Image (cartoon, rainbow, N blue to C red):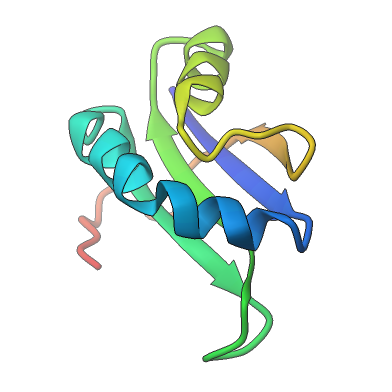
Length: 97
């Protein structure tokens, strides 16, 4: 089952990104079998990060929540998430970014 996590950050999250960036990237790398795509979102190129997006393929919503809450970037005071199921249009076509 595919899920997307749409993260929204407070301005205070920028400091957490600076402090925990390496840990966050190592976490993503350790979970590439479940977190298929991950990246930060900005209002415009070069602007500060305001959130992020993950596409996950996991067994359940509970597993998606577990992955989110174990991420070094998960600081509920500075980051919220909207978790949605996702179905890829044109499922017969492979996608490479």
